[in-house]
Image 1 (cartoon, rainbow, N blue to C red):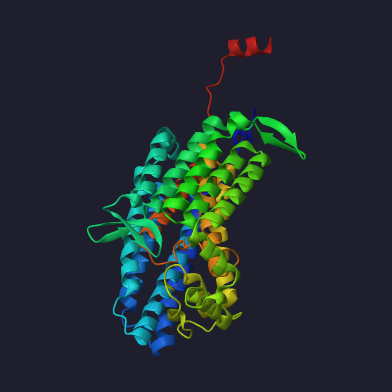
Image 2: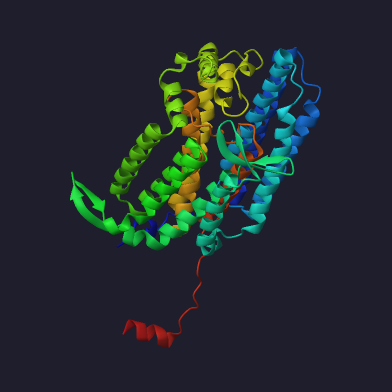
Length: 466
C-alpha cells in the first residue's frame, strides 16, 4: 500500500544559497535588535535608565547568535533561513522578561537570586549543544539506525525521576532528577528520543498500520491486531500521569505519537481512536487522582479556593491588566504571580506586552512549526518527513498546552514555554530540536545533482533507433 510519505517531494532546483545568506543575516539582526532592545526597555521602564550591563549582555547575546549563524552556514548551507532568527528572537524576549521579573522580585520581595544571568549561561550551553548537534549529525538518515535504541533511552529517561536517590518531587510533580546540586528534567530530552523512535518505527510499520478494518460511521477503523502500538503508548502516558503526576508530559507524548501515526498512515481512524483513548484516560485520571481533579477545578472555577488557585487568579488579573496593548516593558507587576518566570511567563508577557504582543509571540512559534512542516513536505526520505513533522508537532503541542493552561483555555499542565521560560533542560532540548530540523531542512532543500551521461557512440545510437 502506497503512502504520501513515498510521494516525490518538490525539489527547489533554482535555489541559490547566496541569496539565502543575506536574508537570514538581515532577519538575525532584526531578531537581535528585538531581544537586546527589550532588555534596554526593561531598564528604562523600571529604573529610568539603560541597564549598566547592556554592553556585556548585548555582546554575549550577539556573539552566541553569530556563532550559531556561522555554524549553520558552514554545516547546513541550504537549511531554512527563517528558523534560526525566529528562535533567537524568542530566546531574547525570554531573557528580557526573566530580567524584568528579577528586578520586580528584588523591588517587591528583596529577592537576591537572579534567574536572568543563569538563563544566559544556559543559553550559552544550549547554543553549544546546538553547534555540537550540527557538527556530529551530518545526515539525519543515520539516526534511523538507532530507532529502538532511542526508544529504550527515551523510556529510561522517563523512569529516572522515579529512582529513590536522584529523583525529586518539585511542585507536586516527580519529573526532576538532582545530581551534584544540579536539577534537570530528563523528560525534555526524552521528547527528542521518542520522536526519533516514533519516526523510525512508523516508517517500518506504516503499511501494516494503514490497513483498514471494519467500517463504522463512514470511517475505516484500524484492525484490532494493529492497536498494540497505540495502546502501549497510551499505557505509558497513563503511567507518566500516575507515577510522576505530570499531566502535561503525558498529553505531549501521547499526542505526538497519534500525530505521527496519522501522518504515516493517512488514516483518520487513528485520530478517532487516539481521541477516544485520550478522553477515556482523562476521565479515568479525573475520577482516580486528586491532583487531576484539582487541575480541573482550578480551570473551571479558580475563585472557589483563592488560597490554592491564587497563582491562576493572579495570572488572569495580569492578563486583564495588560489588556490589548499591555502596560509596557517594566510597567506591570508580573512578579506577583508565583513562578511567573517559568510556568506563567505567558501571563507575564501578556501583562507587559498585552494581547497584541502575546499574539505576535504565538505567530513566531507558528512560523517555526510551519517551517518544520514545510521541511517535511519537501523532504525526500520517509524518515526525515516523519521526524520533521514529529519535532514540529511536539513544539506546537507544548506551546498550545502551556499557553492554553495559563490562559484557562484548558486545565493547567505545568509544562515550560519553549525558549521563553526559565529552565536549562527545556532550553537545551529545544535548541537541539532546532538543530535537527535545520539538518533535515538542509538535506531536503539541497538541489539534486545533475547526472551527465557519456554520449553514446554511433553504433549504440543505431541500435537504439532500431
